Length: 133
Image (cartoon, rainbow, N blue to C red; front, side, top):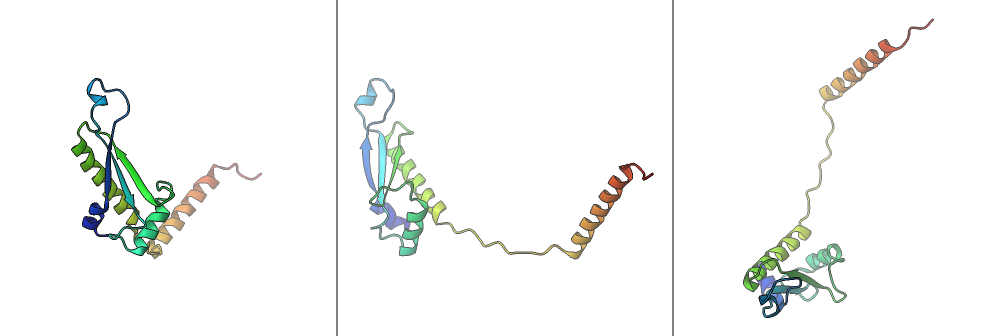
């Protein structure tokens, strides 16, 4: 994943934020919409494109474009910074491959302790029963 190439491929569009806001809200387009075409990206390898297409399938359009919006701040520049950070975090999180778990056996002492505790528990419960007649 080449982040500098990917950032240059991003397309931004400023749109008006929804909701209440007063006099200023109808004049300014502070909400930022980011679009990124995964299939035609040059910053991703073919394997990475396949992984992202599979993992982000619910967030992609039919053409394979990822759309994100940010209207958290009243500043368009701040929203643009926030959306780029969010976008890169999404890519990194979905491209991360967790380590394989190494199977381990319990030690002989641990097995012995477990069996001794089971035996103690069994004796304790057996002593609670009524004696046979």
